[in-house]
Amino acid sequence: MATGIISLGLHLESIDVLSMVLFVVAAAGYVVLLVLTLWRGIRYPTRIVDDFSAAHNGFSFFTFVAGTNVLGARIAAEGGNVILPFVLLSVSFAAWIILGYVIPGLVIGRHQGADILSGINGTWFIWSVASQSVAVLAASLEPKAPKGISDALSIVAVLSWGIGLILYGVIGCAVVIRLLTRGISAAELGPPYWVTMGAGAITVLAGSRIVEMTDTAMLSVVQAPVAAAAVVFWAFATWLIPALFGIGLWRHAIKKIPLRYEASLWSMVFPLGMYAVAGIYLGDADDLPIVGWIGGRFLWVALVVWAVIFVWMIASLVVASRAPRASSIARSDER
Image (tube, rainbow, N blue to C red; front, side):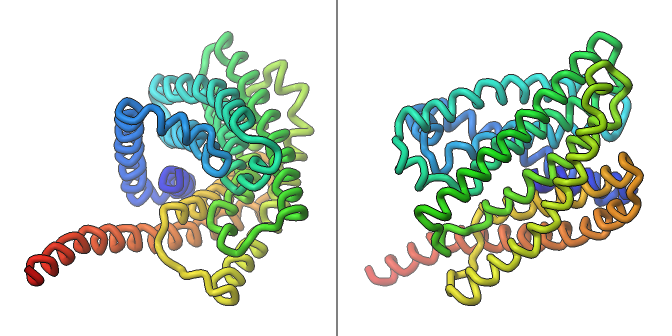
């Protein structure tokens, strides 16, 4: 998700070589993660079900929907054949529908009020992100599709955008309720809470893509309110960025939570990249050049953060791979 959206942003800014490099990395990562997830599902099916029903991380499975659509949007941006992006949209739409009933159903069925409330965190916003990602890819493909399919894609785009909008509000209220009634410790305020901003940013991107669709009956009804909502959500996402940086500073500098590599750091990179791409698209769709300029400049911030975390990840993997060897040598010396 993080690598794919930055690749798309670089493509929009005509930095094609670097964009293609990141696209290859994103596509390779997608295939590897898909294979490993399928293998785990076959090898340990009960663990997958347990993960689906866990209030604190069950909604993370919606990253499959979002990642599939980000990859599809990047492929669609190249133009030409739209068959592969359409296949990816079909797969992601089916997964979005199924997971949208299965995961909340399992979480609610296996937990009761207090347990669910204590498990609410930033990963829940990935449900909204997944919904908006369906809208992004459907709206991107709509102008290139034949008439009948075009109408269907416009309905899918508006449908998923509207559902994502409602989910964002509902989940946001749930997080605030948890904050006010149970509190959220510094240890729990990790990178996944950046998805709060990312969900707002992808709402902007989806709205911008919907505004740019061809003049279908569905678009004529929603174009003006969608355009207005995109601007409002861009403003809110912008407001969240300093707050999230401030929380990170408070968490590590004041509360002394150790700063080490963790996979959830990538949930910070994706929102940064999504904010940049959303700004670029919104600037074009609503003729707001200052917003587009901010998005273009912010893309470099996202790219720097991506590079830092990528190098950090590789270094952590190298250290982890050497640790068992060092431990084995130590035991051998003791013998």
